[in-house]
Length: 81
Image 1 (cartoon, rainbow, N blue to C red):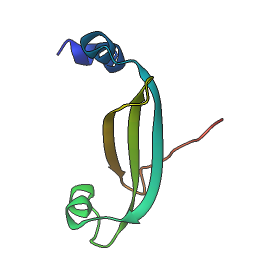
Image 2 (tube, rainbow, N blue to C red; image 1 turned 120 degrees about the vertical axis):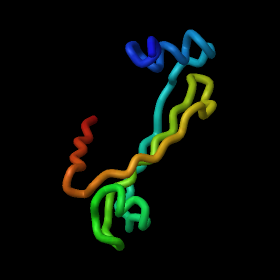
Image 3 (tube, rainbow, N blue to C red; image 1 turned 180 degrees about the horizontal axis):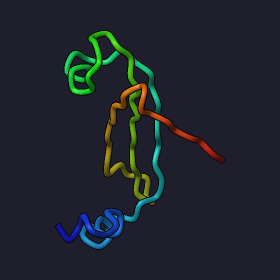
């Protein structure tokens, strides 16, 4: 519980001596699976947005990977330089 109250990256650094270096994010509009459609309250064969994230340490090692799936009507992303 105390971990969730503070920075997760700070915890990773202190507990595992991993310093976050950078992340890759990939966006994909794709047809949702039956389970994803059901969970998002959409008809089967609907499309959604998947965001794939890979976190790397400063030494270039991958230490976290995730995929998040978003409802197309509730996903808004802004990219800046």
